[in-house]
Length: 529
Image (cartoon, rainbow, N blue to C red):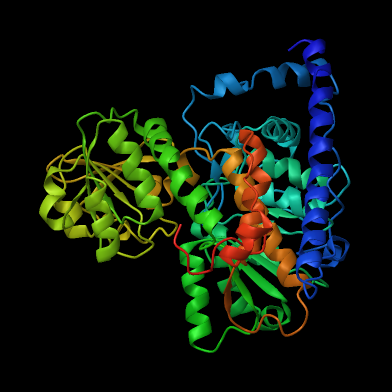
C-alpha cells in the first residue's frame, strides 16, 4: 500500500464524520416530527444520553491509519482488500455465537488457541473492560468500519451500536450468535472504549460468560435492553431480577426473542414494557424477505460452491424468510417445494408455484434442506438418517433448535470439519450429510448482510429504544407492543433517497375523502402489506 493510498483515507474520514452528523440530524428530525404530530410524544434525543447500556466515551470520528514502523505497515499489507476478500469463504457475528465471514477474522495464528477469557488485554487508554479475540486488530477493524461507511457490509449489532453511541447512549455489547462476531470490528470498538464481550467461534459456555460479563458490572445499571434472540433478556430475567425490574424497556428483533417475551407476558412475569420490532413492516419485508432472498444464495455458495440449477430443494416454512429463500432458489433453476403448518401460507406457496409437501414424504429425494420456521425439531434424527448422501442441511431461522443437531453427536457418527462452518457428518455406511454452521443461522454465520438492510433494521431499533425511553409514564404498560405505524413509515421514507424515489402527496380533498392525515400514517395497524 502506498502512502498516497493511506492518505486517501482522509475522504473516508470526512464521509464517516458526515454519517455521524446525519445520524444526529435524523434523530432530531424524528423527535420534531413526533412532537408536531402527537403532542404527548416528546422525543428529546439529548435525553437519550442517560438511556444507556453502560458508561463509555462517545465514539470518535474515524482516523487515518497510521503505522508505528515499517514492519507494522508491511503486516497490514498482508491483509486482503475488499476485492480480494470477495473470493474468500466468509462467515461473520450476531446472536448465539459470532459475526459474518470465515475470512472476516484474519487472525488464524497460533495464539488463537488461547481463549480470550485467559488473555490479559487493555486498550490504548488502559481500559480492560472488554473481552475480544485480539485488541491489537483494532486498526484493521477500523478499516472495516470505514469500508462499511461507504455502503459495504458490517454486522447489524455494530451499526446499531455506532448509531446509539453517536446519539449519546452508553453501551455494553455482547454477541447474539457464537459465529457472527467480526473479531477486527469488535477490537476496534474495544479500542474506542466500548465494553465488548464477543469473539467469533465462542463455545456455548463462552457465550453465556460473555453475556454475564456484559450485564454484571459493579456500579452499573442497565435501563434499556436491546436484544436479538432473547438470550440476553432471559439471562437478566433469571439471574439479575433486580436489574430486569428497573429497566425501562426491551427492544427485541427476532421471532425467537419475541416468542419468549409473549410467553413472559402471558404468564404475568414481564415487568417492563417491550417493543416487538420483529413484526414491524420494514423489518419483516427488508430483513426477512428481501435480505434472505439474497443471503441464502450467498451463504450456500460461500460454504459449498453448490450449483443450484436442477437441485431438489425443500424449504421448511413459507413466512417472509421462506418466501425470500424460495424466490431466489427458483430463479436460479432449483426445483423447490415447501412445508407449512399454516393453510394461508401454504396456499400462498401454491399460488407462487411451489408444491406443498410433508417432509417425511420427500426427504429421500432432496439435495438441499433449509429450515426457516423458528420452531424446534423441524428436521429430526429419523429424517436425517433417511436423507441421501451429499445432502446439504442448513437453517435460516434464528434459533439453532430447528435441526436436531444434538442427536448427531453420537458415537456411531463421525464429524469432519472440511472448511469454516462446514461439517461432514458421516454415517457408518459412508453416507455424508453436509451440515452448515452446526445448524445455526446461515446468513449470520456464513455470509454477509447488505448495509442497506442493516441500516433499515438499525434505524427501527434505535427509534424503538428512543420511543420506550422517552414515552410518558403510563403510555406503555408491562406488555409487548408493536412498533407504531408512524415509525415504520418514517424509517421507509428515510431510505427512499437511495433510489431517487419520490412520494406522491395527497391533496386536501383526497386526504379528506380517505379519512387520512396527509402526513400519515397511511395504513391501519391491521393492514397486510
